[in-house]
Length: 461
Image (cartoon, rainbow, N blue to C red):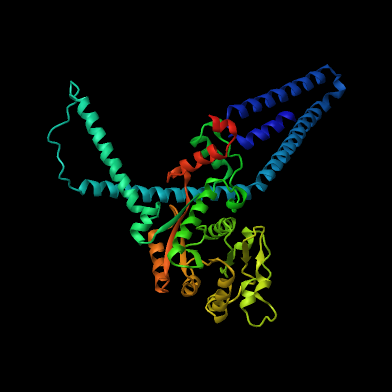
């Protein structure tokens, strides 16, 4: 039975003339012959009375062998059928994979065919292009290096470097249209410069510059200038000294012309006009000059922030006629300095220019002139709005603040042209936020401060 099952399985895989099938068939035939001969031997040993049953027995044994063979074949066929059923169940998935791969092959063949055609066309086009380039002589490498004159090369390189640096410097100078010196202001715009204010540095920059300009043992300028009111916090500092120089030059302007009201403005925001007017007011007050600082920047007021004051009631509240019972004394804020008063902006109005051009504003200026020796008015930048130009006819002069190495000449010229149209009497310039590293003589100021306001040991040295 086992051999019959094996034979059926082999016939499902191999052909009938395969050696493996022939070998199994031979084994089955040999086994059958052995069974038949064994049965015949048994019958020969029996008595003669059972002789008639010999043929019947032999036939029964043969039938039993065929039955077992058929049973084995049947089992083998059932197992093969089960295997084929499993394989049949996997056919749809494998068929799908087959068609996908077949599709990829077809697409790849088409792409290859297209690329091959393009390549052939490119070869044909390349072969059809005629060129006029011909090789006349082949390049021959030199056997000996070419002679070089090192001296000439060095001299030529130095000349090229020198000329190139000069050209680069001239280009940078022409491309940079900002103002860096007071001489440029006086030469280009024809206005006098009455003040040079150095830059208020951050802590790390201040320490770095002090170590750079002064010996380490002589550095006594311990307090870092990071506040806006330098004239208050560090009255002996170089920057406070610069504001005192500005105050002195103001006094020279007022000798022949008894002017009292001055507008402090600039051409752009963040040029330092509000800080300049605040420190200038403190220096005037320290000189026993009765000073009033008025914040007429009705768009982005800053004076109250610098002096740390409230801005609930101010100039706009006084100028608006709807508010009754508000006198000038109600908006004047005294400071810790005896001779310095502040008038803040107040509520920001929707029409600043119209409010500053009102009759009440003119009456306000006339009134404060009788009470104070000098009135400093902070206005918005000229290049942005017209507020400074509106106030200019009612005032005696304008101080125009210019940030060093920042403000372009074109904007300064445009702003000064607008101010000159208002027929102001005098326009003076202040160069503000000058970098200390850039020179302008401020090494002297730092040395002066260290020597005269340092310790006694430093003075003896």
